[in-house]
Image 1: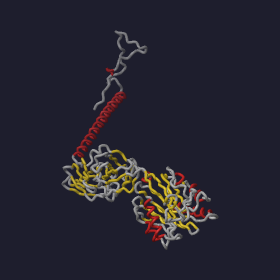
Image 2: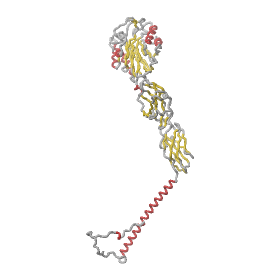
Image 3: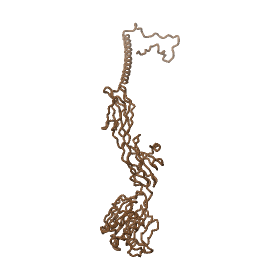
Image 4: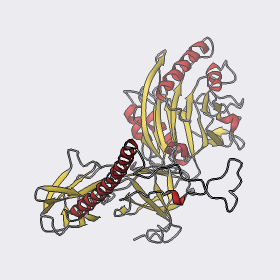
Length: 546
């Protein structure tokens, strides 16, 4: 490659110092440059060196061009060699067929001797549970015995093509396994506007679809939602009170869904429940003729439609068994609550209540307090009934009764750590006509005497609750027997239960105390379910249900 030579003929004409052109007709002065023959030897040697330099420049440029051509040629040769070499597997796909199986497929290479397929739950495919399976002459493979997980996780696989001992790897592909089927769904808690549903954890489940409807066929008022976590429980508080529903659940793992559970029916609870409670000192041992009197007392409580009551002076070792026999059953089908003893017993209707616990503890001066915890079946609300009997005496014993009440409150504070609503009912042996420190202590804790907050006019309120066995009642509106309720209760009715014929007690007079009763109302407690489960609406799910 030659460089261009610039001749003097190509140069512009010289100008005078003042920039004017040479006048026409004026000849250029003879050149001072001598011819080769005229030039001295030194000048001729300089010209020779200039020619040599020009030739050297031509050689350098030509060598550079040759090197560039050689480099490009080598690159083209290398590219051609790579193109003719082994190919990497491509077009990887996976189809899950069970919680532990998947069918893998890929596009192979014509010149591959065999393939090694690596499958595992880590993207690097280096974990302990990564499988390496050799396949020859095929481009599809069913892999079983994969390890399911709870919750579900992504799985990965890669295909290595082997050529004469050399390996070329595909890209790493991702897939997920099918989730398992949801087992038996239970509903351990219900409330007015919601439920808590639970089920066994499902293999490969990352989320769950929850579907509810008003009918077993899931065609009426159907709603569907998807949980945002893998927790095997569902809590909602957005249902209608006292309404029947059906529920079914399936597991979700990415784009895969499992089979639905068996549909489960349930009903939300009513907004509130009402029941009659009572307390009665029946004087089983201190008064004669208990066997016949007890039968009348038990029938009277059944006829008065009492649902839950506590007895004082009900008999210990000697007549405790008789008390249990007399007051159990009847038209209200009463059963005695467990935990009661020391002459204080509690009876309830199992059709209305479930007993959760109970016990007895001393409060001083030979006295005891008995308690029982219940759940209202219709609403799910829980509460505690406390059976009270404080020391008797008209004077000088108010301090002892106050001490017994303090011991009772301290004991129940240990029992009722969760702050359930409470009822204190029984024989306080004190009222408005005496110093009523036990009542003051209860009121300081937010309790109310039911007679004072009844929404309807109290019945038989002018009759004293304590008396002798005379048939003549006392009408000074004095009560030594009381029912105190915590602030969660409403009192719909207060009634002193008396057997009267005209203005006199009906013979035989069955005790020296009258029974005190109250119809109380307790609302359902939706907060007991816990926080509602975070969910998202799944578009079109209700239309595509199987």
